[in-house]
Image 1 (cartoon, one colour):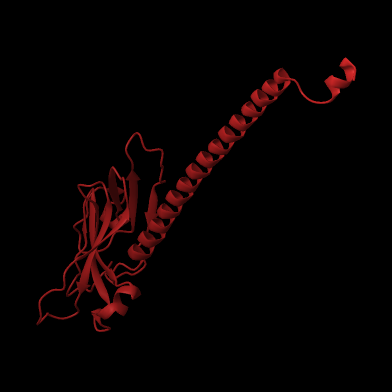
Image 2 (cartoon, rainbow, N blue to C red; image 1 turned 180 degrees about the vertical axis):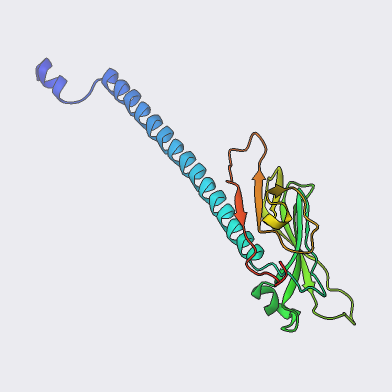
Length: 206
C-alpha cells in the first residue's frame, strides 16, 4: 500500500486533537447558551410573578375600598386615614365567612400598612353590628406584598369640604377618593403606578 492509501485509511493524531478542541468549544458554547437561556427564563418568571402579585393586590384594594362602609348619621363607622396607614370598615371576604365566622357578621375592620419587616399587610377582624357579648375574635394578618419600602395615602375632599387632596382623614364622612402609592427600595426594580380608588357607598348626608 502506498503513502496515499495509508493517509486515506484514518485520521492523524493532530487531526483528532483539532477535532476534539473544536468539539470542546462547541460544547462550551452550547452550555453557556443554555445557562444564559435558563437565567433569562428565571428572571422573566420572577418579573411575571411580581407583576401578577401587584395586579392581584391592586384588584383586592380596589374592591375593599369600593365596599367601604360609611355607617349612618347616628353611628358612623370607624374610618381613620393617615399618611402611611388606613383603617376602615368594609365587607368581609366570602372566604372568611366560609370558615366559621358566621353569617351574622358581614363586615370587618381593616387596617392597611407596611410593617417593620417591609411587608405590606392587611390586618382585619370581624366588625359586629351590635354590642358583643363574647370576646373579640383575634385579628388576622395577611401579607399582600414583600419587600415594600412604604405605602402612602392621600384623601380627596368634596368641594363643600374645601376640595383637593390631604394626607390624613378624620372626618365623619368618607373621602371622595383614596390615592395609594407603593414605593420599593432603590435597589428594587419594581414600579407600581399610583392607584386611585373610590368608595362606592355613601350616606345621605355626605
